[in-house]
Length: 536
Image 1: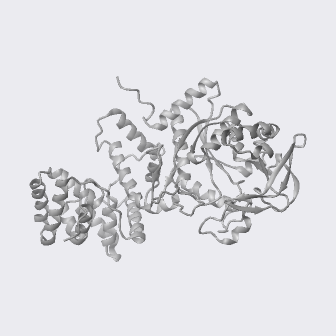
Image 2: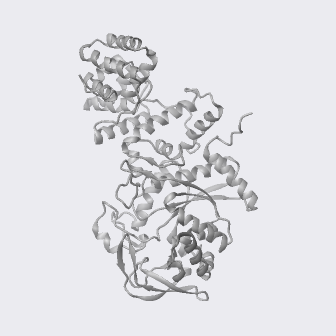
Image 3: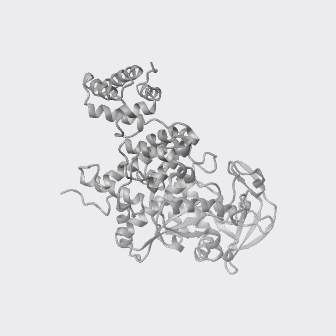
């Protein structure tokens, strides 16, 4: 007998099962199982920020599927200080370096603060992707006193906190100062203050605004000495202890994290257990997305790839597929990868609706489950019309401006994607819009990477020669069959190879008419690139 399939057979179902078993062993209440993700508010949210949320929400859904009440807490770190002005924003914001982002004005003027504007971009993306979440602002949480008990315990045990930080990461700072940043009552900055002493009877800390090194530069403090009322949210815990306080106060049972904050998570796990006497949540560690140069995609480095950029060229579900298909391992990514994921989602949909057979029962369950999670467990009732991305961009490029929709529809009918009586539906309209945006912005599409055998390479090279002289549709179609046979290739497999090179999908319209419609020069250029030879 094979291994039992848990839930929908994905990693997320397995993780949910492990969380439930762990919580049962700990003897904790199972009435509400909360997952959490941190919502950055100090710069433009990037693709990785959405990944954190998408994965935690998938675990939330899996917990619900296994019969438990669960919710995702989207915790917005809007008490964080502004460390640098993000690329593309006015330099006038420099005067706010060190201020909590919730007290920095919105440079666009449409939200109450810089922090709210930035976090709203990620919330908007989550909404588009069908994620459900309970939004919490750090500013609101601190001002309402929701972490007060935990802050009191941590500040009363500051020496122990400092020892844990020193033992785990070698940082001595918190053996000398409290793990708390007060907002300076004089200049309004948060990172320039040093919290010196805690007065439990008044629930206040004394501080000195002396300055701090931020991003390699010294930010001078104003020299003010004062006291901050902890209970009124006049400051915040440092990252080296705030996670622990949140986990206990909000009763969090699962939080994924990126490897860049692995040290903070390790420190907080110990603080949670040893000082707050709360078993930290289950964790899963994921790796970062890198751009093609190998740099981490980040809001601070200026190479921001935002969810909004993705939505210009691809569907929300294709973006969720990017996030959920793999949990571990670093991946390089740029905008030119979007068509690959749009086509891959179509392939997954074919599996889900039984159009593409998968013999292995476990793999079939996993792929179907992955498709359902891409749709937040609300998949469409019937498959969409799958027109390969490359083909649509080509049609958009060729379409006359005055009758674009009519032209595209006629071609899709002639290629067999639409019936003669069938109109372009909403999903196809969106696909055409993505393709139009692509052609507007990039002119061409990245070829699908394909490795050819020596026989395939020779066959493709011969086809290039044929296309230089042949104009007849049927003769081109027949030539492809004959070339395949001459090179001991299965004709069906050779057609599949050609489709992959030309439209990025294993099948498509009849090749003879398509080659002539696309233009033989364009086809020859694509084929020649695939075999790494110069066009004849």
